[in-house]
Length: 78
Image (cartoon, rainbow, N blue to C red; front, side):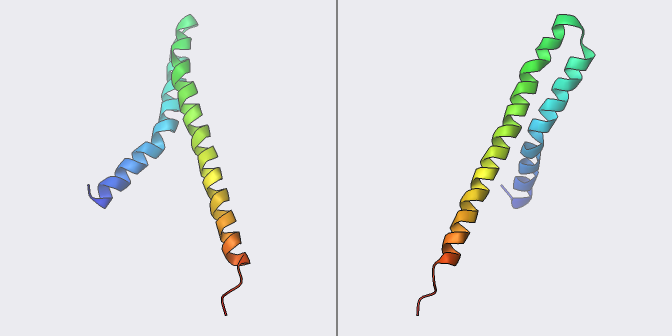
């Protein structure tokens, strides 16, 4: 797999959750009555994916920040 293909795949994966939410909202708006509930699973899954990715990103950033602080706190060797 070439680096260009990897970038395209990563971009599509990054857009998958927001597009799933958009598709669910379009499905909910376009249906009537009890059929609107058919769009809820996609909406919940897309929202859950966005929330979990933001939590994972926040956790990774915190770990990197702590590692940088530890490296800066260590005095240089004489």
